[in-house]
Image 1 (cartoon, each protein chain N blue to C red):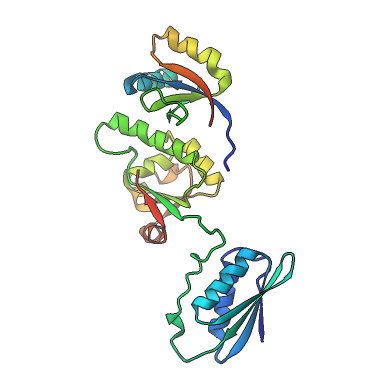
Image 2 (tube, rainbow over the protein chains, first blue to last red; image 1 turned 180 degrees about the vertical axis):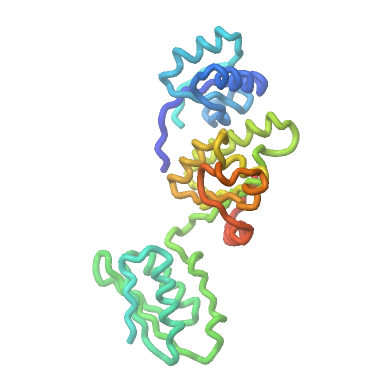
Amino acid sequence: MREKRPALVIAFENVTDALAVEKHCQVNGLPGRIIPIPREITAGCGLAWKAEPGDRDALLPALDGAGLAYSGSYIVLL
Amino acid sequence: MITVDARGDACPIPVVKTKKAIDALTGNETVEVLVDNETALQNVSKAARAMGFEAAATTLGENEFKITVKVVKTGADPGSAEVKDEAACCCPGKKNIVVAVGSDRMGEGSEELGQVLIKSFFFALTQQNELPGSIIFYNGGVNLSCEGSPILEDLRKLAAEGVSVISCGTCLNFYGLKEKLAVGEISNMYEIIERQEKADLIIKP
């Protein structure tokens, strides 16, 4: 069985929001990547942004500051 | 009596050795096969029976087993008793999954969405408990196995876990990417076909 590790997962209302966050993070060197939303999280559009749990305190304010929308953030085992 | 020592051999070698020893016989003979695990014991017994011979299994010790195969050559075409060495492998229940990727995006429609979906697909692939045996990249798919690909991290992870990654050489050449291959090996159309022929399941994202 594959070993799972905690991850920060940010969910979005729609794909456009997810793509906007991907673009913003890539341009600004913010950590993380696009993933399909884990099965444990039923909310959202199907895409999510995954980063390390420790990135939460830097990432969420950065998204907020840029006016980028997300529907929630979670720590899940991936 | 002929003794085949297949102790310490990884699957499917015990079956291959047994089959070779039997094929080499010209008359009736007893072949004794020594193996060191129960899966090999079952696989060799099954293979011998599939060839039409009697096979008796004996446990000699904790990790020592013997299969006694009574080979009776009837003059029939030995090729008629075909034994699939790889199918009789020591990973019962494990499917040979091949992922065949012909594009750097997933599905028709929006290019932007397709590029996101393919990244999503490869991340999800790394999360599966049962990984594919091979990933084959061809045509535009070779962009994904080369420098600058957004899925290199996933591909490296999969390769490190034993997934064989191959990219079509003709395609790398066509796109001028031969020097930029970042994961896996360059391959050709013969292997691309053979791997898919041997697959239990082919996934085309």
